[in-house]
Amino acid sequence: MHRRHKKSGGKHKNRNRGGHDTAAQRDDDEENRPQGEEEEAEEQGKGKGDADAPQQPQFQGLTGPVEVKNSEIMGRYLVASRDIAAGEWILRSLEPLVVGPCQGGRPALCLACHVQLGLPLRLGAHCPRCGLPLCSADCPGPYHAAECALLVAGGATPLAPDLLDVRPDLYNAIVPLRCLALRDADPEKWAAVNQMEAHNDVRRARPAIWQANEQLVVEPIRSAWRLASRFSADEVHTVCGVLEVNAFEVGPQGCSVRALYPAAYLMSHDCTPNTSHADDAERRLSVRATLAIPKGQPVTLSYAYTLQGTLRRRQHLREGKFFDCVCRRCSDKTELGTFCSALICPKCGEARVLPTDPLDEASAWECVACAQYSANAASVDLLLRRLGDQAEAIDANDVHEFEAFITKHEKLLPPCHYLMLGAKHSLCQLYGKAAEYLISDLSDDMLRRKRDLCQQLLPLIDLLEPGLSRLRGTILYELHAPIMVLATRAFETRSINKKDLQQQMRRVAQCLEQAAQILALDPEDSPERQMADAAAQALVQVNEWRRQIGNNQKC
Ligand SMILES: C[S@@+](CC[C@H](N)C(=O)[O-])C[C@H]1O[C@@H](n2cnc3c(N)ncnc32)[C@H](O)[C@@H]1O
Image 1 (tube, rainbow, N blue to C red):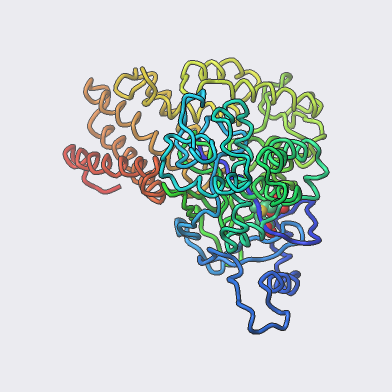
Image 2: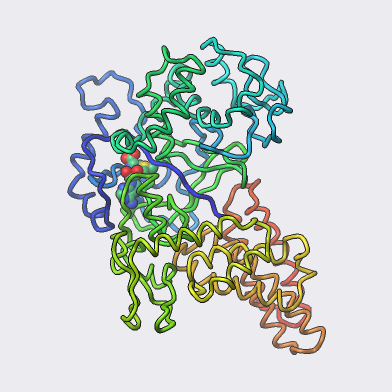
């Protein structure tokens, strides 16, 4: 699974947050420059006649080939300050401002080192000072000290040792508390957090969000943990907003950790992003270009899953990031020619049932092939929710269930549908890795299935996450193995000749070379980097075989 970015940034005034379009995104640079510079100067404390005032760096961590622009619609965003090459680092090893468990995160984590804890928590260890769960009472992990000091100072400690077991919802309050602790403990970091957008006005008008935060964060911090005299309800709500809009999901898969970073939060969203980001073992974040970015163009990332359809992505962005995306992909009913939201028409059988206006969630869906079929928006939404829930419920390691999902819905969803792509993406990794599906155990049919899944995904990924994207790198890596094993098996049984074998091995080498190139850009301790190392080693071996079978031409 590629990671979802959660986040947003900075305190801007009078900003129209109704949406943006890519033209506006570019044009407003010129129109708004004077205003942007004024705002920026104000935020730095510059331009107020105090020449001796210490000049804060405007944005911490902003050292790469980027600069900040302002737009009426998007607020601040990053653009390339010079031409940036694909693969080039844009932001490097940014230290997190704050790190901690995800909202509603599962499983439970040690609050000092973030290792996963078994459940129930009452079997585990607890901090001897405040009572919150740790993996061992003296865990030396760096993350817990700040909230521990606050809780002890508040006087509500030690908490009942099974508190988070009884009320796991209190995990929601940990990162907000860590943010609030910065106010006194680290004013520089606190200033950086305070630069970030919280969208309080929009969030206050949405009772589901505001009340949930009131109950899960404001009340525990101010009442249960007796910190009402230290932090106002507004302050707590603001850090909740900052986290909702700006936090990145980080850590190894399944670890449920989120973090705020300086500078990186300024990247605007695009459903076809031109960067990729990754964090290392210390949760430092780096951002690199996946495509060449010409000087002056926005440097973007996707706040949503790219393997989701427009309807779902836009809902996620509206509900969680508080804007209406009108990017190139969202505005195009075919989603850049991928047709990844299209449904199969029950009248003509073509996969051409599309929203009449993809930017209007209430617009009807119609078959653009036969014009004989239409469905109302609500029924399509319901159908996609139902099928999406079924896909979500599949055990992540269950090959059979993913295959069954694809077979069950193939009359409704075309092979390119995003729900099919999600299932295929899981399958192309599981064949060759899951128990009972190790690569050497796979039948030729299964190997062909893995190969075909990868080959179906790649052209679509080239449109949705083009360039040196991690998704592309991992699929290329997955693709090399079935081609290689099928070719060697076929050569051994003399079903193919030497020339065919050479051709297949050339393809294998190409996949490995590209996969290694892309994945080597990830941090040293990441699974992707391990995959890159494996690809590089395999490439040496494959090139040696190619030399032995008489083709030493480099791919
Ligand atoms: C992580 S922040 C990005 C930095 C933010 N613009 C700022 O000035 O602090 C995310 C917020 O930026 C705005 N934004 C980002 N990308 C956008 C886009 N493509 N269209 C409209 N607004 C966008 C939205 O207000 C969103 O909630």
